[in-house]
Length: 319
Length: 110
Image (cartoon, rainbow over all chains, first blue to last red; front, top):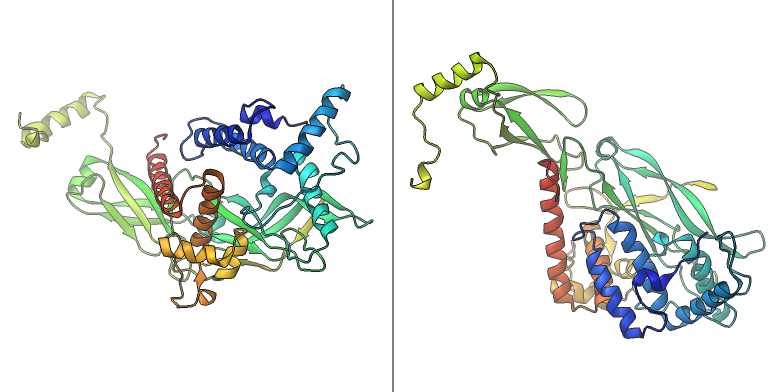
């Protein structure tokens, strides 16, 4: 396990004030926001930044982390491998009060989990209150094929468990999750009792898995509908045609392209989208593909077309 | 490594699909918040109850509501934005994601 330098992650000095921590976090969170960032590793950076901020924004955690960092700097570990010294957090107590928002720890590093996850829990035990465990959140990416026909997928999470001595420990845990057919992007699968353990005999929290669908070569998913670009030749578009189209479930259907079809025309195949109580539709977006004029015959055909049809596509331009 | 097969999983509802609806109290808990906060979300229109009712404890929510509520919670916590600004950011995010998916489907990179 690597020792994580949270100050470096936020690009600040060890002496940074609370305000500087906040400002730096906000700047970086904007820079690496997955919807905005052009950086390839934006998502991983965002996780690091969130983790660093979770520790440094909190006075108790920051003080404990500083004390640990000092011990590491003094002692050093020659192989670069880091293990927290036993009792490193003695005298510190971590609270997760209400109003701190969702517990995102499932995403955080092993370093974080072994430091603060366990310590937070021990703090809670010391105070001996009774509370249901916190709900946890994670995401699972599936293929479009999984969404269409349902699947069983495994997801590995770092989760807290009690060992034989009753001591809480973070362990990788693999859950086998049933993905129902027709699941949409942004839907959640709720796993009862798979969140954080409860305190004082109360039940564990739940785990909410957000479903993401990986980009597909042919189809784009929007809610329960699928979209596909359907290339046709100018003659097929002009004269109308029957063309073969692959369906997401692996079949092939014949589709009628109407006469005088324009590029961008949307054809709907009802009920061929994601399955469900009301199944989604498959939309075909017509795209006119020009045959290349790379032979004498092709060039001649284009010339004949130009002679036969007087057509000015620029009539709207006023020149 | 411990492997556990989970049998008691449920899917949260989405429009026009079956699934479990989330009561307001459970939506609040999933976000580490109180039910009063959910009432505020409904007031600004970040989430919308699928079961119209006067009393918040009768409200029921779908998967999309949970997604938006979690995002709003993070925006509030990390940037201290007001809920109206959070609502606008969420709408813009959704539009950016939709447009990026369109570009991706056209073979263009956003």
